[in-house]
Structures are given as C-alpha cells and as structure tokens.
Image 1 (cartoon, rainbow, N blue to C red):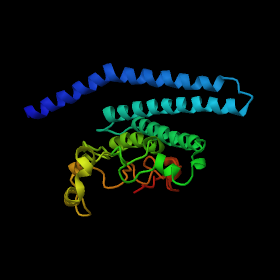
Image 2: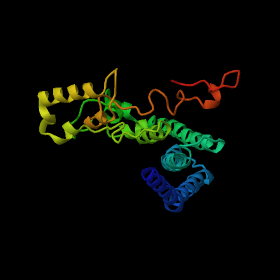
Image 3: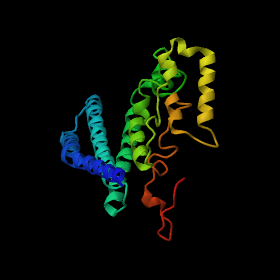
Length: 248
C-alpha cells in the first residue's frame, strides 16, 4: 500500500510541476509565435515575384514554428490530464495536435516544391530527403529527412496517442554504425540482425529491441498522418450511424 501511495504522490507532484512551471512556458511560446506568425498576414503584398517568394520563405517557417508550439502544448496537456480519463476537452486537445501536424505537412510539401532540387539531376531529392544506407557521416538519412517527414512531430504524436513507454521507440541512430569503426563489419552486422530478429518478429516484440537501431525507415504513426488516413479528419470517418470508423 505504501508503494502505491508514494507512486501517487510522485504523479501528483509531477502534475503540479507541469501546471506551475512548464505549462506557462509552453503556453507563452504558443501565444508568442502564433502572434508573430499572424503578423506576416498583415504585411502588404510585394509587387515582384522574387519578393513574394522571399516573403513566403519567412512566413511559412514562422507558421510551421507556431504549429509546432501548438502541437507540443496540446500533447503535453493531453499526456498530463487525459491519460486516465476521456472528456470532450481531451478529445479537442488531441484533435488540436493532430490538426497542427496535418497543416504543417501541407506547408512543408508546399515549400519543398520550390527547393529546385530537380535542377540538380536524378537522385537529388533522395540525397536530401531520403532514407537509405549509412553515408560517411554514419547517418542513414538525408540532411532534410527529419524535416521532410516531420519525424519528431510524428514521434511525439505517436508516443502520446499510443501511450508508448519504450525509451528507444522510433530510434533513428544505429549504435553499431556510430560506435564501431567501419560500422562493425559483416559479422557484427549479422549478429545485430540476429538479435534484432530474436527480440522483435511476427510472434513477439520486446520494446528494448529498438535500442539496437532501426531495421528500416521509422514511421511512428504508420501509414497515417495522425491516426487517420493522410488528408482526412476524424469527422470524415464517421459512418451514417454516427459511429467513428476505427482506422487500423
């Protein structure tokens, strides 16, 4: 009994610290960057196309930063207040985080179309955005892969929505590739793959198996953007009886 009482006190202490210290900071960041983002909408439209493009290069990142602050605040609120109960406020809070992610995805895609990577020839987009074999820096992803996929947004969303406790969930770094000269060689690689298969396969999965590095490109939310198919909202997944159609 004493153990449960102590654990409950720790949880309450963490909630109090969040309400009194962290949440005011996150809330202030959300309001500040939202206000700054909206200022771009009040600026007069530039006359030249080059000037308009330059303004978009500033306005869109500002909006994306504002959306990230909104998502983080909503996820922290949901994690702090909604893990043991569900209410209309909790559903709205989670929906706010999902909508921020969805909107940011469309903005990122819009700006990527203006990078001009096509002019660099075949393979340029894969080099910048792609996931593949480790390159000389020992990382398996391109310079803008995380921004292209909004990976950290997805991972935070998945951890809260799916209530994931695995400390190595959706890891993107390979400890063998990073820690051993030459990536460890074929024998070490074979042993790594064998242990990964033993800990995580079609029959069972051990959380800490993720700490051995990613088997493939991680996708924290799976084929969906935020719990629903990309481009759709939960309102669009309600059938004629008013029951939400669950997405597997």
